[in-house]
Image 1 (tube, rainbow, N blue to C red):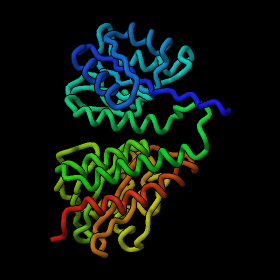
Image 2: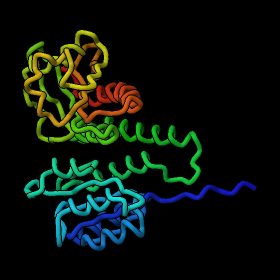
Image 3: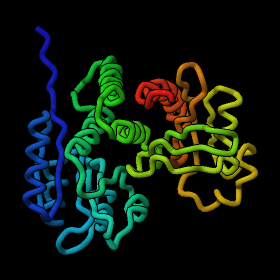
Image 4: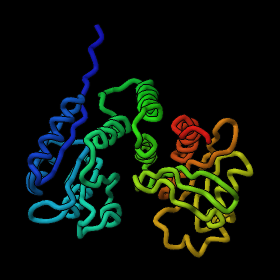
Length: 300
């Protein structure tokens, strides 16, 4: 008789000096099928990381004794065999900047206070990008992708007023991007940011599209556009001066249509990716642009 596969729960460590919040978040993860632990100091976090070996870490940017940077460096060192995917939790007024922790290797960031569902989305994405079954069958990856697309579709079809913002955060998490935005095209020189994953209040922000020639290129061609390096792109030649200090290197845009008419673009900005990753991002983004169209407000 064939032996059943050993199934391991995805392990999540929460390191936060706020004991009440850490325990509440831990219990929330348990309720949703994860195995979670809460610790409150750097020493406790180091011990749990080396002995318990969690796959995901939710880390408060400021911990007693020191800030999170020292713990992140410890995780990246050779002393840690299983290196968890790190999400930093912080308030906006922290002395250590989000850019600094990103440079240290942090994948995701959450600004407090945040809904627990936001942390759950990160945990779900992490658990589906890291294998959790010993000897998982080849079809497991396809099942994980279907589950993710189901989550994204549910978000797009929801009634929540923040559904577009949440939808873009899910997409951005999956591609490990720096920014994911939906930009509405009005005229060749005028556009509006409908939503962006990094700012819930940016909806309605007006853009001079002459400073974003990539959007007009997508409108004219009606096709997706991949710019591997923004600093050497001919399409962006007219705005090169503004791109020299940007934190992103790669840009990918997908056309969005509403009622058969060009509405705007789904724009992804990210650090440079491997060719295999870009092949996946291109196909994933094309599907997501169709899903985003389902979440658009009704045409006027």
